[in-house]
Image (tube, rainbow, N blue to C red; front, side):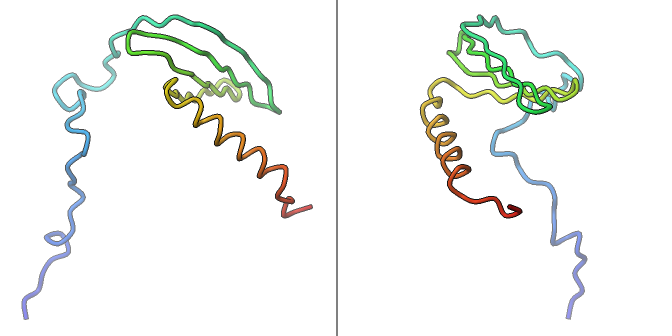
Length: 108
């Protein structure tokens, strides 16, 4: 009966399916990314409760994309959706709106 240490059986080291990240190749942390020229095609802002959302359709050499920025008290989070996925994204949002309107709230 051999005794095996847990450390030899469990490893948190996993190879990334995306390969090595640039910061792992000697560039270091905090290095600014190379700025890519982006052109704004259209931008709209909407206020919902305490949140401000800015939807901006942009274009760069790699293509068009929608940048959705949420601003809550100065804290910003951004989601970028390539234009090739906008129709599918809209379809899912439409389904969520429909479900929100049809499913009664639990605390009503």
